Length: 171
Image (cartoon, rainbow, N blue to C red; front, top):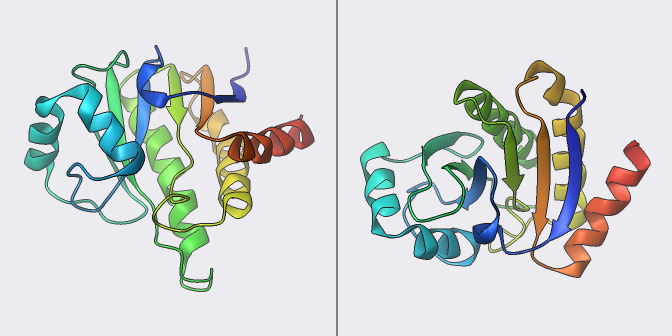
């Protein structure tokens, strides 16, 4: 059975999936946006676990338990800061998505929800970021047959429309 990819408008902290992805900063410590929301719901144990992991480079990711979240795991992905697109941002963003799949498969994760990595305070344009996310996951997912469902969890109707347009085109 092929992996399904779809987009929804929801609060990622409420999803009952095996793992959610945190759009994290290099320090992995709590901050604003999606990251802050995930840490608030997960509780202080998540911050402690992240502190134990140390830092993480842009384009990479780390795995922790979900603690107080409905999701069993959190994959902390560090996306690039947008600098116009000529500083390696597309490759770093694609690397985030691939690395998340690798960690998910290694942990036996079958369902995973992604926010739109780097489009918040990192400033990545949503249309470009969504294209990289969908293209990268479609190209990579066959390598990880354990993953059955990928959700793009959007926080705005504009973001949702960007993902849905790409998902319809790819079908």
